[in-house]
Image 1 (cartoon, rainbow, N blue to C red):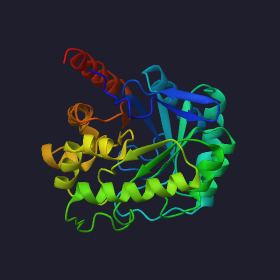
Image 2: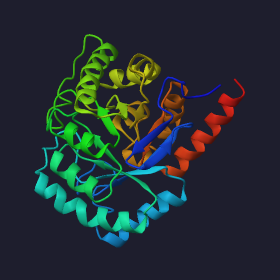
Image 3: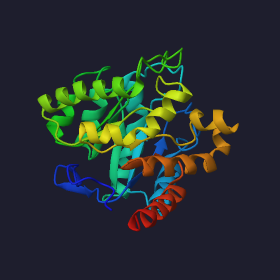
Image 4: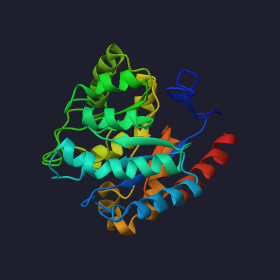
Length: 287
């Protein structure tokens, strides 16, 4: 049984480059922020440290990496685009040069950062705001004909975890996706991935309801779903761990995500995610 429906895209396309989606993919995280919730500052010490981290993820089987320089942890303030670019560009430039074949996503909500990075060879944009912080980002993505990760967030990082409320979290996120997909398509964006935004304005119960309904997002919107749950509080609050202790819990929840239709896992731990996908693929081949 194929994990990806024939109605869904079979590949991501960025200019002349393409990335097949006939199996679940792993997106490795490279945080260049000083205050990320798990590995803040660890890989921004030097370009050599960042390059070595990317090399490690590539050797472990990462299909793509996501480079971000703005913290989106609960309570974080929005970053100035100039500060973001000063953080990200020196690292991105050397990583692009060192790994010319690697599919690189840029985690930004600023159209100016997206434009500069796409011009320098980035392949995809990952926007936690769904185009609501800087609407011009849709037009930048369309200009470069690259994929766009559309994420749902209730509020902003600064206030998103202050008593998040929904009448029906699944239906409200689907409504958001439908409206934003229409705006993206109107702007000329062709390749879209959905990210329901685990932890971005959701309670633990909201997060697990979303996890259970991943196939609903995929089937209703006819688009692949990316899941970013690695080491997050929805895991830690259930099993009593800290982020640095949450690898086992993350792996367990990744398997649930795959069983419920996830097409991409955005992760801190590439090796373990790839092994989870291998086991999932074997299980699905017999069903």
